[in-house]
Image (cartoon, rainbow, N blue to C red; front, side, top):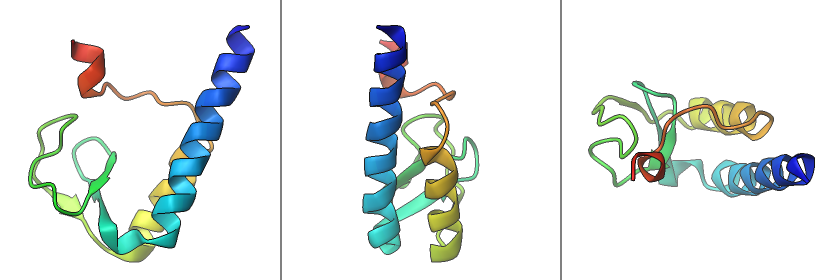
Amino acid sequence: MHMAKEETALADRAKRARRIVKNPTLYKVCMGCDSIVASKVNICPNCHAYRFEIREDFVVAQAKALSTREQNSVVAEDLM
């Protein structure tokens, strides 16, 4: 059962990564926690950093990297 949950989480991450790779200009990478966030965000919702990398090639590379591994960062939902 636990393995199926992990596979589903990775499949969800891969799906989000494909969406990001198709439209990298809609996203940016937080330089505080390496999360990918919407380009309209001014402060990272995960770590509250305000420095971002907006280069498309960097966003695409980060999306591909994150899609192949489990989430290991703390997100806002984890704090509730």
